[in-house]
Length: 230
Image (cartoon, rainbow, N blue to C red; front, side, top):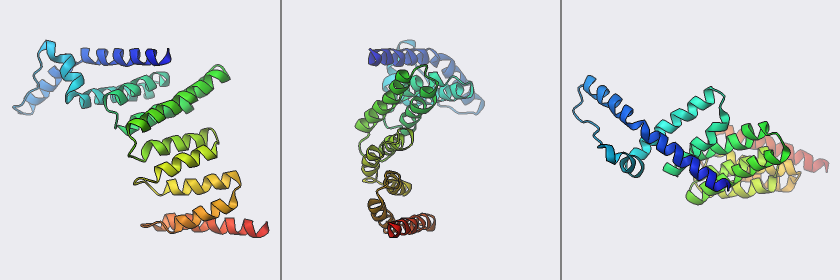
């Protein structure tokens, strides 16, 4: 039922967006004329839907939807943002910020305004499901593995699940703070031996900068002192 409702919302958003195309075309035409450009955007009335959805206008559609997201953000209509961001993921599945931002608003902003605990948990579950769908459609990048790991780490304090997805993230090119988060997960769990091993691994990462090494050395020293006390 929820999936059908979401699909309906996505289609409605796309159709509404299509209705704006003639105005956008006129604005672009005026801009081109004023700037002395010869190329023009020409679409026949019957070609709006097919050109808009199935050709290069996907990018234009995403741009317009992203502007709508910004409007909702600044007007406090956060509850409208996930549906609009969902439409962007439908148009451009590899646009990582849309997946991440939609799940963030579900798990943090909207869930905290839920009327009941059950409703709150459902929003968080929806965020997890959304990220898993994004991972399924973009399996070869670190981004959404990290986003899901962070949700488990920060929102749910489920450190085992966080470690699982952070480890998946570091299989691909990734920023080093994800390696540090794995070590932090073990520290949060109280597993000092595993935390020590992870901080030592952080020190051996190729391309490590002074900032990263400084954090790793500091935390490794703390862990070793705690182990000596034990």
